[in-house]
Length: 299
Image 1 (cartoon, rainbow, N blue to C red):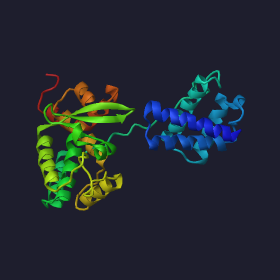
Image 2 (cartoon, rainbow, N blue to C red):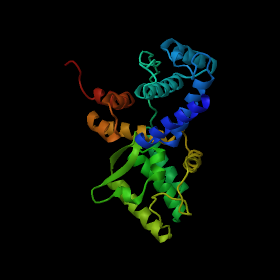
Image 3 (cartoon, rainbow, N blue to C red):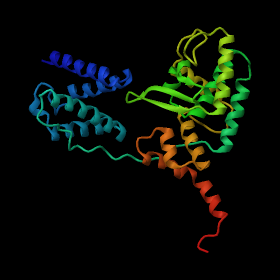
Image 4 (cartoon, rainbow, N blue to C red):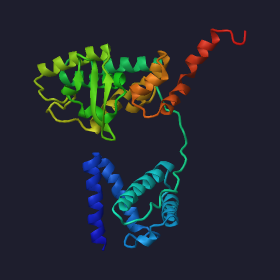
C-alpha cells in the first residue's frame, strides 16, 4: 500500500511541477512534508479515517515541540500538507480538507534591514576598489553588484538573466517566471543602462558569446555560491555587514527618501499587497524627523 502512495505522491509532485512550474527547491520542501506524513504517529497514510483536524494538529504540534521548529517552519509544513489534502479532495479521496480550520502560527514582524546613505557610499567605494581591473571577470563582478543595487533583484533572477531580457529601447528588464510562475518588468534606469552597455562591450571583446548576461569565463551559469563568495570578498573591508537581499530593502527605502508614492513603490517592487510595502515606512523615520524639525507644528 505504501508503494502505491509513493506513486500517488509522485503524481502530485509531477502535476505541481507541470501546471505551476514549481522549482526543484520547492518540490524538495514538499518531500520533507511527506516524510513527516509517513513517520508521524497520529495520521496513517493508509487510512483516510485518520485524516482529521485533531490528528493533523497533534502531528504538527508534536513536530513543532520535538524539532524546535520556528513559526515559519510550522507554517510551511501546514501550507504544503493543506495543498496536498486539497489534491486528495479534488481526486475524491477526502470529503473535506482537515486543514481548513487549522490556523497558521503568528509571525514576529521584524523590520527589514537596509543600508543608510553613508553605508551605500562606502559600499560603492569598496566595489570600485575591489574590482579595479579592466578584465572581463573584474568588470562582470562589479556590474553584478551595480545590477543588484539598481534593480532590487533576487539572487536566482540575477544568475539566470539573459541578454534577450534587456530592453534598452523601452528601458525595461524582463524577469521571466520570477515567482509563482509569473513574469515581471523592472525599470532600466539610465545609470544602470550605461553600466550594462559598457560591461556588455567588454564581454564581447573578451569573446564571451552566450545569452547569459553574467556567465562564468567558460560561458556557464554562475552558482549561488559564486555570488556569496563575491559578497564575502566585498565585506572584508567594510565597517558594516550586509547581505544581497539587504540591497533590495535599501532600494525601497531610497525610493521613499526620494518621496516616491507608496503605491508606486509597491508596483515597482511587485508586492501583491501595499501593506507589504508599508513596512519600509518605519525605516524612513530619520528623514521624517528631519522634515518635522523644519516646520512648526500646531501653530
